[in-house]
Length: 115
Image (cartoon, rainbow, N blue to C red):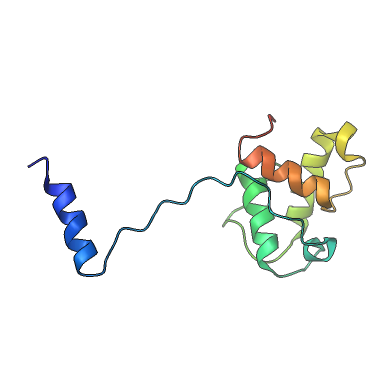
């Protein structure tokens, strides 16, 4: 009976349903794409990525539904909350995401920087 999981795994591999590998946590922050991706109303995947990190880091007001591809005022408020926390390193808390804010959001979300 202890062999059952291995048998199922082999059977799925034979019929083309190989188990998908679990993605390893990112070890390096993705390159900053540019400020234009994070302006109010911008719609793109980078906005969702940043929102996911901000949510995971518990910055600012909580999302009702969750991250989306659109930058909203709530997102800018979350960015400002992160910037305010790290004021000495990130400068004024203006809510605009730059390269260092991007890196700090990723680091906190991935446990590389303490909040």
